[in-house]
Image (cartoon, rainbow, N blue to C red):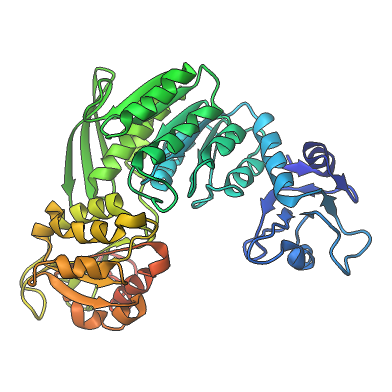
Length: 480
């Protein structure tokens, strides 16, 4: 069954198809376009109309455009609309309207992408599940996700993000979720908001997209929980809270052991134990919220709990790996926590907690003592208090267990200066500088963390660590 026909897409967008065509997918990027996709010529850094010819040459089934590009053949399969972004939004609305899927929308200052992936993992075993790709959660990512949704979808997981006030409500109204989940509210994007309370009000706008029989799920442990609860009550919908201070979905105990998190909770009066194949108390909290959402969607909670145990985070979002430094001496390894995708005070604090719980190994490296080492980069968009927020990390409780902190960027210089001298590693302007020195900074037995805002490029440090290693040695019982 095709995703979009020319007639259906033209009706959805009030556009004009130049001929009959059929498309099986929707793409905004010629680099990832698949044969049969509808190429959407958005205008971003460059005008997407410049790439229409290339998209069609690469097998696109048609292109969504606001004008016919120069040199285009008369029989080119096009869908012509007044505005491409508005056309994509209309296509997303139509994609949402034609399905009977149970839809959950996820937002939060921290953890929305990992929570979305947890939900995908838990729901996929119980029905045809469609979810946002990567972090496609903005003004084009949400309608793109909905436009890609097959009509026979049974569960849909839509991630919704924001950088400025007024962004979430219109996206929520396009997604029209049955369940809305807010993972947390934290000091993120403070350049655009006066305070954290303003961020909470924006996150609570996720509830605007639901009917009165919708279910609002949010964290009970926040200073701004009352704001979220008030918005749900005002809209007359059912509110479910999760966390240590909750009454129905209560997180009671979290234990980190190596690469695993084991949590004990009480779910509506019933004991619940679940496991996650990644270390982090924040993962446990988000998973509890996700489990509440699964239950609210009408899916099987026991099956979801089992499937959750097979979920693992994406690269760059807290994934943990072992780097083998010697192909022969199998004890010469170090552990790497790759959390380089993004950072804010809440998520960096959580990552430091994970590093503090990691277990270095003594007696295997040239130094003789395994260490906990953090490579941290600037946290962006924190507003007037950004310097103080960076410096305050020096007093985070996890720092007591961390041996060395290497800092990248002008903002992290404030942390560097605030650290005790015995924990103060290097400070450099860029990740490229730090990556070039990694081989002198780590040793077998160490546990490493790399984290910073995406623009700081801590992935370069992660890559440098990986390049120190070799493929894991094969067991004698494995095939050659």
